[in-house]
Image: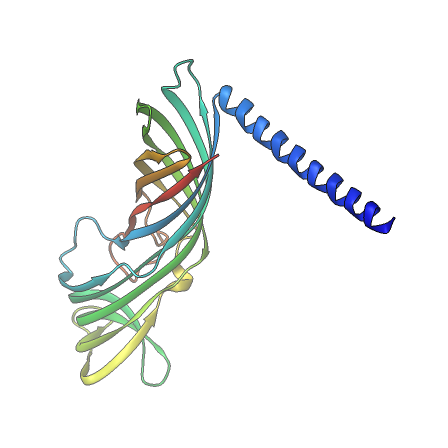
Length: 259
């Protein structure tokens, strides 16, 4: 008797699960017929936070590494015409925008930690290593145009909130002029370095333009690429140590699953 009851309960649960799955599937089909689409994406960011154009203070870029920058995104699309050529896309994305660089500079605005732990501000000439590791909550708002049954072009804006930011590094093999380019010369040679950290000075809100394309390689599976270009400085206007603007410019590539 107990076995029959257990078997009956299992059958009811399985039937309920199957019905719920069919119900969800039917809901997705109905949404697609009305022009709605839902997509989940996993991607990788390649790029950097950089000045455009390259200022005279930066004499050469000795090395660059994009570091590990992943993204996870969910978006909703609505095709607004009967032919489903034109659409609007809203999304939410968790992403990391990272980079590491090594540059040679001259009269570069800098605030380093001195030998006694004090902050020393001035103009640096020599080598600079920089590490950027920023985590954002990003909201893309895009227009879409279907140029092919499997291919879409997209263009619009993004709004980002900095959840966790890191912009630090160290200077080496050079000297700091305290205050201005004619100030007291403080050398750092023979392997001596000094660290700096501008993480607390990063701007919390960023925005910019985004352009991209995606291709439905298989049923439900997409391959995509999006270029985002920040239009406001990574640092606020009242941050005066770095004397030029720096913009986050990143290419996000990955795969998406279309429900």
